Length: 261
Image (cartoon, rainbow, N blue to C red):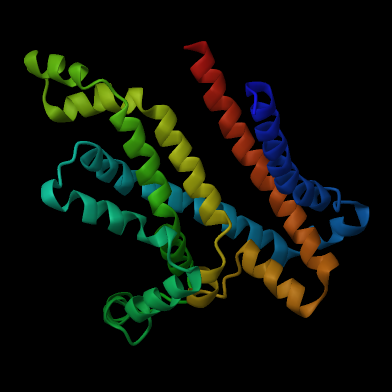
């Protein structure tokens, strides 16, 4: 097989992948019309979409706060002999069915379980069926995206920069703040967006821990069961457009800043 034929074959496969991804999404987007606009105007739909966007954003922020330090430690192999087991544990949520995640978390934060009972005794209400439970479910399944993206970014930074800074007497905290974070902004932002996107789409774990308050995926599932494909499709279409708008804006902002530098 010649080099040209080889690349043509690969390009054909790449085009098929693009078609596979784009055709269903474009079909869903074109489902938006004046007839389906009334569906999105319903209060329950607006609230469910807001819940998904806001709670998933909060999830991404929490993942950033806790995940970036973890990623830095992993990139520096600070866990020594247990480095591989720790990395495996971090990535476990990626391989576990999300309904299993929901059940597992229910055994921890359920009303009669250890953490759930303690929470109820302190605050006077149960964790399940609340926005807190939704964030917990979203965080569990999406946290690896922040950690893995940031970790790979930290690995690519030239270690000699840290050595020079240390010879000049800079503390580790200062080196992390002034060298590693600025040079790794792109990877961290990518991880943030992936986490946010994954959290928005979460259904399996959320529907077990908190069917109410409704998130958009749960609302779509409810509409599909109680009404028809048209109703659920309308909600899905608007959620898709809103999500794409948010993430493309972030992407373009990030690319624009990178280009200007």
